[in-house]
Structures are given as C-alpha cells and as structure tokens.
Image 1 (cartoon, one colour):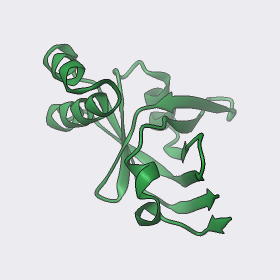
Image 2 (cartoon, helix red, strand yellow):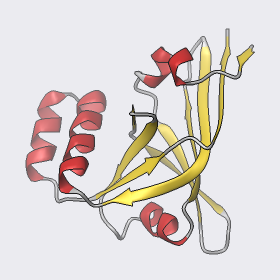
Image 3 (cartoon, helix red, strand yellow):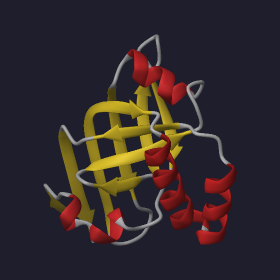
Length: 138
C-alpha cells in the first residue's frame, strides 16, 4: 500500500469517472453522505447542486465543514479524501462551466450541451484541501 499521495500522484483517479462522496453535517450533527459528480481543478474540488433547497447546500450554509472522498472500485484501488471548509457560489458562468464539464464527463457531450442550454442556474460547491489523505493498494 502506498499512502501520503496527493492529486498529482493519482491521475487515473482524478480524471476518472468514479462518483465522489460528499459528507455534510445535518442540524443534529449527524453526517449526510451524498454521491456526486465532481471536478478537480485549480487545487480544489467543484461540485454542482440544483439550487438553494438542496440539503447539501443548506447544510454547508449552516456549517461549512465537509469531508469529500473519491474512491475507485477496481485495481489498483485508489482513493483521495479531503477535509476542509466548503464555499458556495451562485455565479451562473461558473455553474454552467462545472455543469457542462461534469455532465460531459459522465454522460457525454450531447447531454452536456442539452443540460447547459436548459438547466436553471444552481449552486457550485468548492472544497479546498485542508487535511488530505490519498492512497493506492495494488
């Protein structure tokens, strides 16, 4: 097992199609886990949410502390986890950039084009690494 890895050490994982798991805190301080599409860019993870009514968004507004994990499900097993504080953006340009790239990554360019042209503006969640943990198991 290799540990202490960062995003640059895990290019297949960071450019792959494995869903990420976002952990946010409910009002009772229990954890909600959400499978999400994501993008690693400019030293941070970007995730989109439909709108302000999304529970992930409401949780982050109340308590920005989150954990985000990208694990794969095939050999070599890899994962990258960060704990940090999330920020929210309602910038339409950023939202459609993230929506377009993640949709193209998981569902292809035709679906991405359709979504970007018809989807209402939502919220972008940005998470910079605070504490990070990356690993690979052959």
